[in-house]
Length: 90
Image (cartoon, rainbow, N blue to C red; front, side, top):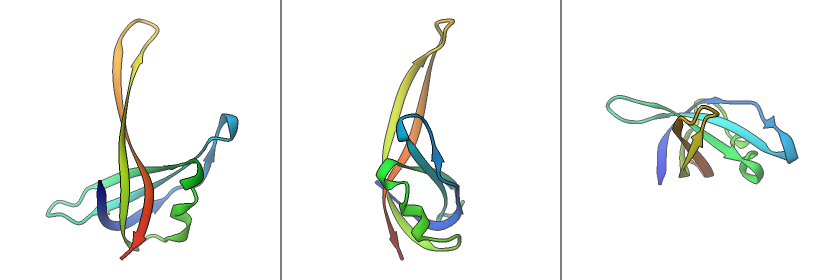
């Protein structure tokens, strides 16, 4: 799936255990009611946002991911994420 819009914000590179890397980019979509969409760029793709700046018009290719988590009390919750893998400047 692709999103097209304007780069609203580019976050700092975050690092975690086992050399995990993540950078978040917020894209403001071009619709009647623009939506700010947070897109995560992980591992070897975490450097892609740094080649762009706030205000750039871009097309971002993404994958949707979902996961299930069970709390210590047995409550089951579901989480979704949007993970980017390509950015094209328009």
